[in-house]
Each structure stands twice: as C-alpha cells, then as structure tokens.
Amino acid sequence: MAKIVYSMLTSLDGYIAGPDGDIGLPVPETELHQHFNDIMRQTSVVLAGRRMYEMMRFWDSPDRETGATEVERDFAHAWRETPKIVFSTTLRQVGHNAKLNSDAETTVRSLKSQTDGLIILGGADLAASLARAGLVDEYRLYMHPVVLGGGKPYFQSGLSLTLKPLGAKSLAQGVTLMRYAPAG
Image 1 (cartoon, rainbow, N blue to C red):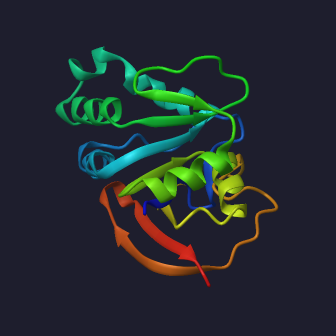
Image 2 (tube, one colour):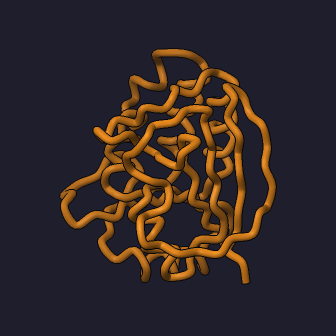
C-alpha cells in the first residue's frame, strides 16, 4: 500500500504563497534542490491540483533536460518520468506523463490501495480535501526562514487536524523539514 505525503515549501508563518499569489520563497539552490530530486526519484505518483500542476509544468519541457544546471536537468528528468494525476474540473488537457481526473477521493483511495511506494501530494486545496477523507499519511513542511505575512496557507482555513511529530531535520538554505502524521 502506498504512503501519501503532502509536501510543500512554506514560510515560517505557514504560507506556501504570498498575498499576491507569488510564491515569495527562495528558489532552492543546488544542495536543497538535490534533496527534492532524491524525493522525486523515490516517488511512484504525483498528485496535484490545477494551480500546483500549472506551476510545475515548467519542468515538463524537454528543454529543461538540456539546459540550466545539472541538478535542474536531473529534476526535470525525474519529474517527466514520474506519472502525475491532476485533479481539476477546469483543465481540458495535461502534459507529458499526466492524467486528468475530477474525482479525487475515489481515485486516490483506489490508487493508494493499488500502488506501492511514495505518492507525493502538492497543493493546499487538494490536500485539505484528501485530509478530510483520511487519505493523507504524512505532512512534510519545508520551512524557509522567511515570513510572508499572509497569502495561501499550507493548511486550508477550517481544516482541523490532530498530528503527531515524526521528526525534524535541518537542510540547506536554513530550511527545516518538519514531518507529522495524523494522530490516532
């Protein structure tokens, strides 16, 4: 059975994007980027909402595998090779190695029981929906030493969870990885 992990970069005050919708968080440099590359290579499937998928489509371009830095090329390759399911009612098509779906809970419940390994979940709205259905196994907050002062929160407003700590780890660029699982 797969493990579903909601994983996002956040500010210290808990936002994944600033008040204007701009990410507002520092771009991962080589060492931190390599951490995310390693996670992507371990991932069986990526689950994404529309906004998260549209942001990550940057990595779909085959040009990403021939340009930029080695660590970026490596991530682009891992991203393109990893199957993705995009949950949206407004998108009409998705890119390379991605499938479009509109029924998150049913699809993810089935996927979780039929897949082995790590399923990475990105996007606060999709994560909240799956958390309410009891489908998120772990929360990974990659906290940057930056305060955004508002914006899109990691945890959706109105979502109430009791979590137990799984550990913390210091990473490059002053980022702290904080891991939690649902309690009980």
